[in-house]
Length: 528
Image (cartoon, rainbow, N blue to C red):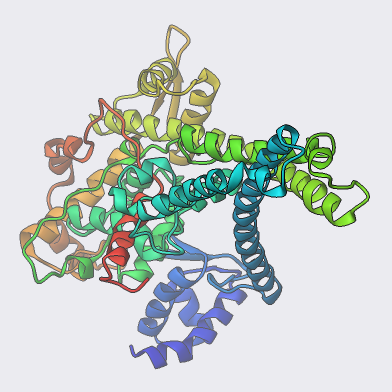
């Protein structure tokens, strides 16, 4: 179907979905709208990406499209919200520039004033030039400051203005010439390091690698293994992926949804995709308050602290020695009020941010527990459906997350959450330990492996192997003869190859999603 034709039918499909309260099969929409089935099917696939929708299986085995009743379009933003975001962005950039200028300028001013006050006390009868210790001394000091700042910026000659600073771990991956200059450390001290804002394409890269590594066929369980999303979130994400990458969904005989992406397997190069790390090798580091090294924080905090003390004590130290009157409003405002207020705010903003950072780290710790737990649950479930005990789950997580305090209640909550998502069987053993069995995981992996093998062995398209309840008896018999015996497939399949490095964990930094493109920008290979 052409893009123009699809756009013409979009409003009719949306209207039908509204009348159906956001829930219906292709047949429901066809009956309501009167549009051809192919047009409706193509239109619904596009809506899965552009709207908040996902797929389910109806009681009769048909694909069921579900959307929020309000049909909120992704990517649209109210005018007021856009204006607020723009104003916030302008204010933040302006404030960032202001604080660096004020920090450095006031620091240098008060260094000069303190030195002048000290020399004025010693040489009260000398000429004004002696305040700075004579021309030679003053010139030497000025040259020292000039050389320091000049050296610092020469030390990072390849730094591009506007380039983000993601913190000390990211800085450690750069060459000396590419390391961020001082002003970026000042920004980070107050506002925290820049947060990567990956595009949807960057976010999808590892998922596409997963799809290609698994021969173009995955299930929701496999997506969760990779992303650690909840299963409802993974269903929504799978719907978006179907629309974005021309995927197809099939229903297995036992009602499992399997997703195939034949277009992603088309390639002019005979290369094999390397499977991305699973969730337990993609743990999140703690978010840092500034992202700077201790040394950089000490320099920034020291400069601001010096300015604060010098400004606060200037009425009793600097003003009397230099003959500055407290009745001079310009001096009082410029050398006391502004620097004191600025310095207090300079310290105050990071202190206020501490609450948000602490809350985010609690979320990350909770998510890391889920990621590590997924490794145990998947390994047991795919190993002939073995169960998982609450006590051993806690021991498993504690033995791997040694860098954080893990509470038993947090592990139990994560395990219970997985059990609810997968409708796990729950039992209590003789020792009183709760044990969970997750048959749905093995069922999903078996279903995807069946489709995967068929695509590989006979090189057929998905349309030739779709499991449909509309098949006639003859078609069903032919299909059964063509497919592998499901029980044989299940007994012979070794799912262990899909669960790498179960004995260890790994961390993934936020900036890794955008680091590759950042490097290309630096080399001028793509537009900044």
